[in-house]
Image (cartoon, rainbow, N blue to C red):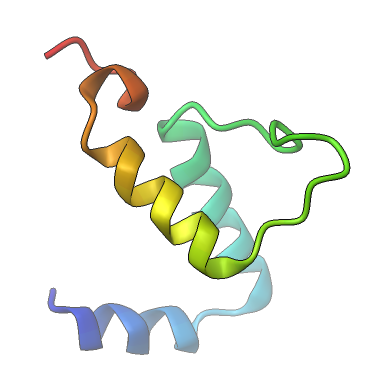
Length: 65
């Protein structure tokens, strides 16, 4: 499935389905709800950069490669 198809599928989902999918992906990556820094607000660019950086390091992904 290419990027456009994924976006189209995501937009066609209900709010509940989106939340369920996001929570499932968070759990798969070992991210817990509220696991961020207290009283810290992240802008979306900062979040994308952190995700990109963490994907470069196996130990941050929880895999022992």
